[in-house]
Length: 453
Ligand SMILES: Nc1ncnc2c1ncn2[C@@H]1O[C@H](COP(=O)(O)OP(=O)(O)O)[C@@H](O)[C@H]1O
Ligand SMILES: [Mg+2]
Image (tube, rainbow, N blue to C red):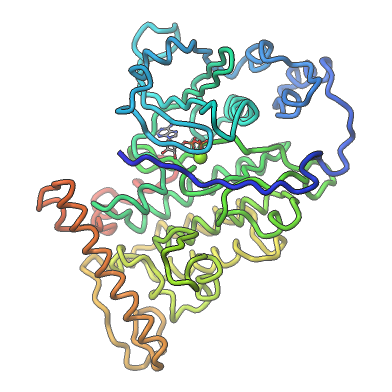
């Protein structure tokens, strides 16, 4: 089982000491405020609970989140569920701490059915702590959406902080895209994942008080058994600007390679920062490459810098597509997705589309069925003009580039074979590394990819 250590970074800006909402009055929320919020069914915001001097203490938390159906577990119960946090149950690990698979059995609690769960346990020697735990409880406890992971409950005992989520059978997108050597995510599955994640971000941004997710990346997108994407890990999520405020100012937190340039430079956070990060993940889905990889040739180490200029050049798009797809994608769909990624990755936040616009652009791509089903063959286009087909270019540079990708494709195929040997996967299961989207599509119809399913 892959043990995942996510590299997160923090740059503490001078403004960090007093991370503040722009133009926000310093008035502390008082108890009557909170009560009126509850009465008017408004969402309890993170600052209502996390500010020093906040009227809500930890012991008040459960009553403040009444209606959220969160269960409060004891440490003893969680130990039992996870076989005493057994290494064999380890699902992954990020900055907060390890995540274990567990099972809730019948009769543990009235109203709690038996099911598999994931239990995230704060690493007491790690860099995160109560604040991140609280953010998850506050946001995931109150926000519900089909593409948001379901928080079942939590535990706080002494210094221990744990979270209990629904179990997501296919783990995270990062592992599926970059570490699953036995099969490649097909094109339509990638688009389905992108749409699910985009719908969730649109939902967060359209809340009465917008929520900025702030750490959108492949490792935080979880997949259920049908590859439905659900956003998880709300440790860095924050309430966005309200009213006339254009942004909030915070310490710069997130993950290198995904964070928006203006946020890194100024600490100004807007929903458009999430849009940039979405563009990075879309690029990773198209290219099958990580946003940062120091093992790549120098000019290719930062995916956005390297690939963004190519996204608007339809003649070169095929050259940067994930070779593991073996050409099994809709060319028209790739062009639209690439143009969208280009816009999301704009340096000017105002030029980026809203997440709702992103959803609207991506959804029709599920209907495009011009997906070749056979093995991908490089073809020579004598005209060299049509961008619908892979071609060999007129100048040496393009030929070099093509050779590079061909070599890369062969290298990855060898890597897969090597991996199969190591894991003793039967020969029959390695005959086809890329599931054919077209076959799936024909067999099950577009409903398979319907975000509603
Ligand atoms: N509900 C879940 N089901 C299955 N795996 C999970 C679940 N939650 C987390 N994981 C695994 O644990 C990893 C770390 O979880 P995450 O919530 O991102 O932790 P962190 O806050 O430490 O980054 C995920 O990338 C995923 O592999
Ligand atoms: Mg994470």
